[in-house]
Amino acid sequence: MTAPSLDHLRTFVTVHRVGSLTRAAHLLGLSQATVSAHVQALEAVVGFPVFERGRAGVTTTAKGLELARRVAAHVDAIEDALLSPALGGDPVRTVHVGGAAEILSVKVVPRLAELLAAAGGPLRLTFGLPPDLLDALVGGALDLVVSAVPPGREGVTAEPFYDEEFVLVAARSWAGGIPEDVPVVAYAENLPIIRRYWRSVFDGPPSGLRVAAVIPDLRGIRRAVLDGIGMSVLPRYLVDEDLEDGALIALDEPQVAPLNTLYLATRSGEAQRIPEVAAVAAALRRIIA
Image (cartoon, rainbow, N blue to C red; front, side, top):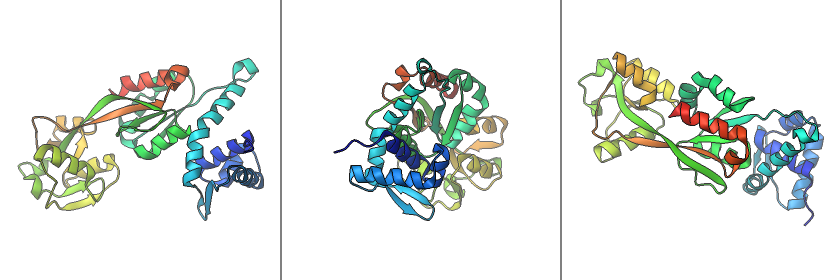
């Protein structure tokens, strides 16, 4: 099989990351027609479609996603090598960090200056769910991911570095209430965080709970709970001050608090090979832990 052109692969990786031929053309400084031609030429070489076209842009096919996982990091490495100081360039490496919006916003952003000093250059934070962020890490779009689940990806190295402690909380107006009688503010319809807490503390699934609201952001849930809407299970780092000043109360105090381990994930070997990634990883360990 004829080897794909590096230019075509670079175009493919860019379209994959941004999900749009138009945006990719803008980023690459090419016309949209040229971007389309690059994609078509690559598809002719690999023998399968890499994107599905739609009104909202393009979606990477299953085979295209596998191709991106295999080549994106190598395309990035080639570009980094071509921009190295030895070749007369003046590169400033941007470090890309992914994680849940809540923990990055609450624990990392207030100490952003410390993280920027470690990076020694620009920093980009990306919020999302662990599967999507880990896919982006494998594909080369991210350098580090703070993941709430074990990565389980080939080519990814992860270390457990922080245990989130979860607390069943409500506003003081619900003091003395039985948890089963207090309405719930949930992260999702299937009560994923509350269900995990119930199984850990009460040895069974939650049953008979009345869901007052579903808010897919822990910071929004905290606000609703503070306003007396109901109870929820939240990480202690998010409600510690509220518990200390009495704005929130713990409806339950188990002997062993439910924990969820966070992992710091990088592409295998990059934390040793790239000083900026190693420095940011060390700073994240200090800041979050």
